[in-house]
Length: 363
Image (cartoon, rainbow, N blue to C red; front, side, top):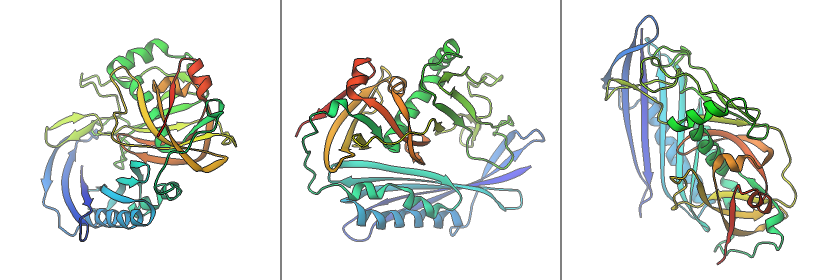
């Protein structure tokens, strides 16, 4: 059995004239045995006008146009379009990723999303409307006097950081031991966190031939036992092996694909909405904590923006979740995370429990 995989990678950077756009194509033919295991691959010289390359270029130019009308400026944008085709060259599935670094009045922000099917829908999936609400120039307003008692709402781009950090804490080498020790214990509110298999190849199996199924890491708040590793000693969980052409070996997926679900709740009318994270600071730290500089507004005074720093261990922050609000959103950055907005307890409650440090940045 054979199949073809195409990856179109593009980058766009603004210049004084027209934006500079570069797109490259990588086309590989994979061979599988009767059990579905990849046995080898070879690189093909695909046509320069291949559809995936056109889609990647169009995705980037549309993102640049949209950024020009919504934010202070576009610093750069990258996109990838992945195609899986059968032995006859017919399209089996397609998935695209878009990541844009934009300059807002409040500082540089990363916007990212991903999804299957038509890549054109990704541009409008980014939260442009959130950034159109920034005052210009951005001057931090004074937070309300009772800001420490107000519940926090993390919009999906920020919630995704906690989801990815929690997943890593349960799937890394030491994290798997922790998950095994805590299996069955309720350590979170009724949230469910699932690890999804790599983008489908049409067979329902990974490149090693193992069934590629979603794995539940947290089930309604309870830690699940870690999924079994490969019996071949490769250190890759079953159903997650990806063939790497350059090393002729199986490797883990480059990006984790994660999904967080949980109970519905409403955004409290007095909530502090953490809308996005300013780039330039280290997010993840060696002690397992995250530190996020966030642009914030209050739900009852949406025109008043200020900055806070939110710090803590992701799984400890998720312990303070009150539920999820709004529609599911696909967030693409160092992981692919599908989540809704996350409603948390107040800064006072979280700090009182020893689960977070929340600090207002004064001008």
